[in-house]
Length: 503
Image 1 (tube, helix red, strand yellow):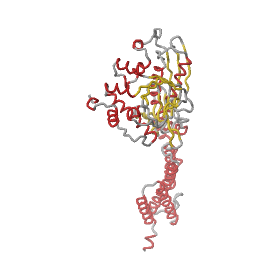
Image 2 (tube, rainbow, N blue to C red):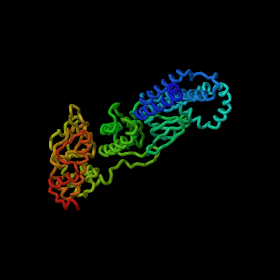
Image 3 (cartoon, rainbow, N blue to C red):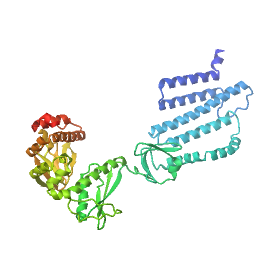
Image 4 (cartoon, helix red, strand yellow):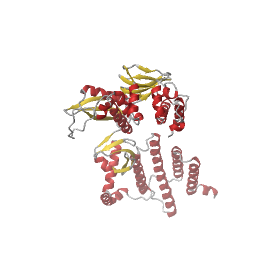
């Protein structure tokens, strides 16, 4: 009796189910382990059914006992469901091993649906012994009615399948649609594609809309993104001279890629202006905004340093005077005075203070590739870039590291003047450079009358030292980089009383 009870297929099936559940709970939800457990369960279930002469893949017409037919049908149904689960687990495991679960989501869901549909039809044919062909033909009318009702949804679904197979974009790509809308793809599913726009808002677009729209993928075929800027200048200088100044602008920028090399070309000229197009590449679309901002700032600084004046757009009619000098420049025509006026650090000085400081400034010129200041040297003067481009570089672990690029209006040498520290790298001229020098004594005289300059210079020096430390991932100096610490050292070196500086 015990032997008959143990040989009962229902009891064996129950034990098999309980053992499978226990193993899955004990071993966790790892996809690989779940797949192995599903295969073992299906293999043992197949062996159990065949040992009791139950063929799950063929209809059973010979048994008239109702309880046995119900038991056999239940076991066959579980067998077909188990077969579908094994196949689905294999599909999901393959996509996970390929490390593309998101990109293959539509194809995965489609394949899983086909597997479950096939298992359902097989179950109807082999368990309930119903003619599948007749059932499919009967359901044709219902399918037509359902298709008409879900026409819009099915349009999105099949458009999603077409987009997934054609792969015009993938998750993470930036795309631009007709009308100028752009966004980054964060998810694709059966019905829609989810984008995040420039303001971090989620935009959901139906797949049918994307399938019909003309779109531009800014991330493919490579991550680099091209940017072009067109600038108009008054013809105060020759087009070649203006073009050369814009090449200096591109040389000054650290946000753009140097390979392929950026270009500056004259693309138009008339009686009112010279058009220059600057073209360059950045590492990715997300870096384009910051790079354009930096280039625009450099265009303004280099143009002002070289006497270039921006012109109005072509469609705007403006009558320009004969490019006369500015009123302020006529009053103070000296280059040192105009240079001080253009630097925010000295903009708060009175005209008399600017005159005194400008009269003490000394002009220096350096040819291309000339070493301006060597690493480890202590400069005793504040150096102001007038024109050209210079770079602060140094060797680290056999590699040349560029710490900063200096453009018109930038300062260097403040490290030695303010805190008696050595230069962190070699300052080298990348183009012909004009520099104006303010010696320490002249700067000290101004700072005693304007103590707030100590605070501003402390912040400037602190920011530069933090940027250099971030680039090299190491401490560059034994001095603290906190602005308050630097300002305290500056006040002590220049003998500025603390209470005066805080007024």
